[in-house]
Image (cartoon, rainbow, N blue to C red; front, side):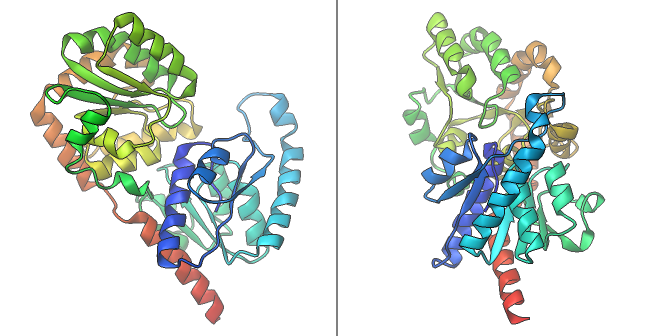
Length: 364
């Protein structure tokens, strides 16, 4: 298994591994990640072993990291070859991120069964390159034949963390767990696993208005903004805003929320569809080919979400969030529409496909 850099690549990989483990408990797993990235912490915490590669992405400007990228790639390809020789996998699965390139490339050259899972409506460069050689490409959005060989594509949706899927009847317990009030409306703010500066800075300017309107907030800031948020809460003496650098019990966070403010990463979008939450999406502009806007528009065109541009968030977010949370009719409409776009049991579908590919190869 290989995927990392952000939770959007890591959690689908873990979800697929857990699904395979359920179907075939005797399966052995090895994850491959990038040194210094969050997968080196999150994967062992999920109970799986991981090896690290010395690999990073290519920056959009001239940097020292770009200059030594060829060296890193060669070193990573050599290590990938050693890992495969030692572990002898029946299949290699990539869910995106820097480390998936070298391990998948090496596996295809060795004739090992390979599958990639593309979360976004616009694929990353690594998966575009790998698509020519891998055996199967599992996608979350229709119309991906524009980017990948049509005969290899399988529409599966994005695997999500298993505990997120069931949130019914958890609201009272969730409100209690977060120390909030039952009779107030609640906004969940998630900028992705690493946080989102624009969303965080916009929420800072909203705190006073939220308090005036009796609105509670569960706020995932990411590590970089956590101290700023804590300081802001102490200044406002606001007991109805709870701040986390990372929320581990996301099912409870979704259960407590009346609306969600989020980036439009593929995993976040898939989760929001499954939990049927009315949401305001603020796509990150700092991603390849503006793919988060494309993810968000896949919902907006179905009247299933509200989109605010990143450069307009500080001006518009506060007013829009208050208007939405107080409009129960629009919340119900958005909830219904976003739920219609959910693709269920994605991890199981992909797990079964991997096992079928292995079985077919053995029978040949």
